Amino acid sequence: MAMTELPGGTFSLAEDLTVTRVGYGAMQLAGPHVFGPPADHDEAVAVLREAVALGITHIDTSDFYGPHVTNQIIREALHPYPEDLHIVTKVGARRDADGGWPHARKPDELRQAVHENLENLGLDALDVVNLRLGAVDGPEPGSVVEPFTALVEMQQEGLIRHLGISTVSAEQIAEAQSIAPIVCVQNFYNVAHRDDDALIDSLAEQGIAYVPYFPLGGFTPLQSDTLSAVAAELGEKPMAVALAWLLQRSPNILLIPGTSSVAHLRDNVAATALTLPPHALEQLDSIAG
Ligand SMILES: NC(=O)c1ccc[n+]([C@@H]2O[C@H](COP(=O)([O-])OP(=O)(O)OC[C@H]3O[C@@H](n4cnc5c(N)ncnc54)[C@H](OP(=O)(O)O)[C@@H]3O)[C@@H](O)[C@H]2O)c1
Image (cartoon, rainbow, N blue to C red; front, side, top):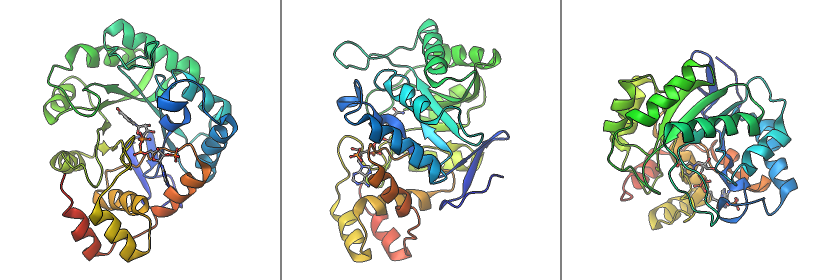
């Protein structure tokens, strides 16, 4: 197992794929509304280099961030990539001229997206590709068979090493697993949005990573009186407590908080060293989902 100084240690998604549990989500590096170039290009490059310097070996991205912009900045900042760095991407949507996020889940659209990720990241194969299903903020019913099978074919061709799935229900995960193994699930979850509590436990039993997006609330920063009260009592910021809580919640949880700021990145990594005492955990557990 790879060594890391980062709190939480590492998690093995597969035999050839171990990452630090403290990772980084690159969505915030694109421009406003995740569209177009970043407000501060040099800061975006600096954030990525600082993430690696801090010991992070897991970066989450997608070619539809920007679109293309975020992956191109990752390549500019970090290529040739350190051997232990793993870039996890996602496919299943595209951007329209207005910055909308229409679905792009047909086999030919997924193939195009995989090739665009490879090109913009400067890779011959993608370590993990998540199939992004669902609506903006939660799963939608429907079969995963056609799009997931398309990704399995690209895995068999060597374009993708491992598969994950995003914004899905337990039933859809089981349907995907009946076709091919998955190494991670990426869904909306944080201390105040806990629909997936049972799912996390079941994935932990299977050794599958659960990667919560919007760990800090995403576009609507986390707000909870209980979270603020616990943070005040501990002399910490609410966001720090929210990240520490996730790291303590289950050993299969991987953190990918997003930021466009080196200072926030450092704060977020520092926050993960915080050990929440039992009475704080009890109060946080009482926050309604
Ligand atoms: N699978 C999916 O459908 C999906 C959907 C959404 C996101 N994701 C992934 O999940 C990652 C995380 O989600 P996210 O970035 O949307 O949301 P998030 O991590 O919950 O929150 C990011 C927001 O928090 C702010 N922030 C971060 N650290 C802060 C700090 N220390 N102090 C104050 N503000 C702070 C950021 O602003 P600053 O830039 O100013 O720091 C940004 O506005 C994304 O980067 C992306 O890789 C996946």
